[in-house]
View 1 (cartoon, helix red, strand yellow):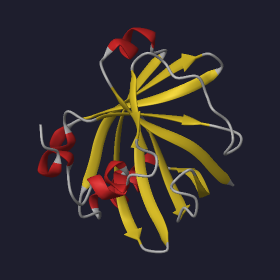
View 2 (view 1 turned 90 degrees about the vertical axis):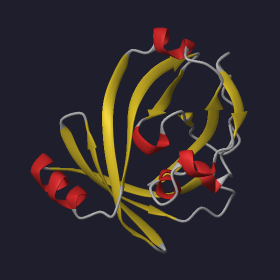
View 3 (view 1 turned 135 degrees about the vertical axis):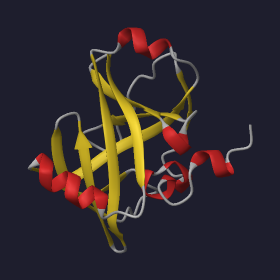
View 4 (view 1 turned 120 degrees about the horizontal axis):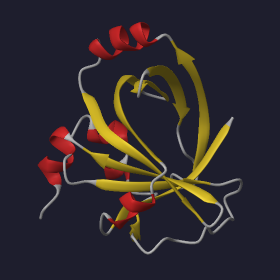
Length: 156
């Protein structure tokens, strides 16, 4: 499967009033080499995901994800050297569903919105709370944030 998405920083919290659901997420990384292996607890479910490297500036990449028993996800997550924690808000906007992540813990203050597309040429309409695109900036990838949290490098 191929994942095609754009990633943006968010300017304010007005998106919260438009959210149709919100769930806590905790995720960690088992490996981050040629293929990234991630384990995630999303609400009351567990997932394991494998993602390939991007060849087009972060816009698309291979992704394989499967639900696993929550207990297995908890065990795998406990084996990770660090985790990223966030609240994910699902926000519909003009035919697209935006995933807006409010990071907590050592990434507190960071709010990132992602939108998935069917092709790399799509230009989804941007909600008023979108600030700037960071799709190609590795600093905003969860796999980077688990190693070097936002609060360590962001200059306020």
